[in-house]
Image 1 (cartoon, rainbow, N blue to C red):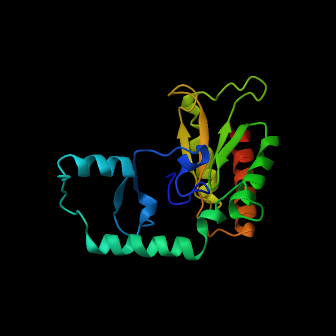
Image 2 (cartoon, rainbow, N blue to C red):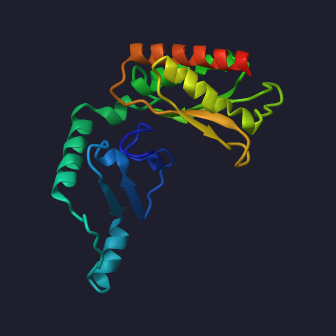
Image 3 (tube, rainbow, N blue to C red):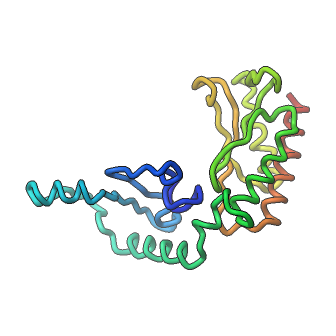
Length: 204
């Protein structure tokens, strides 16, 4: 979920200048058009294998599947052609990522919203029962689920999550729109989210 430009970098670790020895990626690599995953290894790892046995024994039934690989190649070309990694960058002005960040920040004035955070086009809105103490809603209220249903009725898909405080308590929504989303679509979606949160807070 944090790769293929979602956070405004090819992989989220780049925000912290981390260079992993081995990185596993999937999902966004083929944009969901075909099942595809990949393992990316640093030169250090590759050289260690080459200087050792010289072989890397592995194999899976659908290893190097030509249709999946073709889908992944097409997706990577499209990401590059449309400059979608930059489009997701919330730190760059005029991008979908920055527009989403600004729009979501406007939800902070709602009593039930305790925090808004994220990177690029991967953001979260955390809900609280008490804004001053940041006390969470009781888990049985399923507040994030209720908000998500209210969003769905308005035509907006979000990911409701619970347990962000201690594994049991804590409600939030995960928002992860595509990099091709327009500014108008972002404004509309956040307006629907605002209405959904207000409706859910009144009903609790």
